[in-house]
Image 1: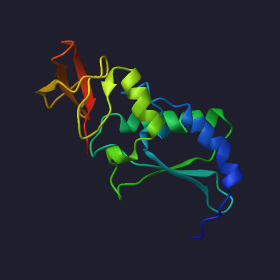
Image 2: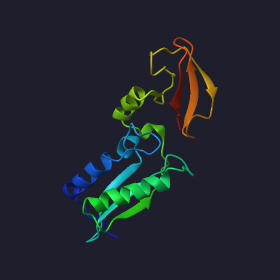
Image 3: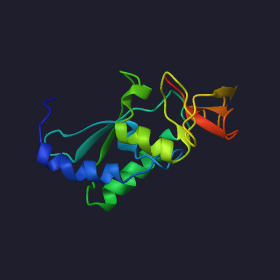
Image 4: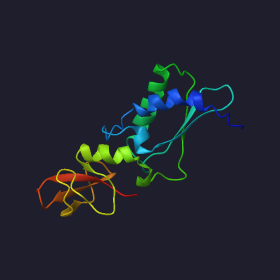
Length: 155
């Protein structure tokens, strides 16, 4: 199958996708999260959107797929093809710079080599549990301001 490049046609689709928040991390869009791999047209069909789950078995994957399909159909794209892309696997490196800032502002420490408290910025933190409010986060505590917080896991 030949992929037809249509960058101008893809721009409005990207704008729709940029407005879709992640259901578990509403501070970031699915584009900021890096799970939208591509938008393209193939022949005369509507947009093909490649989505990569943050990890295998992520419970939000089905919700994201349904939300993407619904949002694109509301925007006038009746023939939407959603493709699950498993290779390469999603990594926390796929988060945009904007996502890092949005996560911190939301009170979630973005993935990094050093854990910093999203409230006071201190690096004096400790891991409380590898399991946070969702499977992609771990629960930490700041020993400076004593506030608990989630940290997005580095994958």
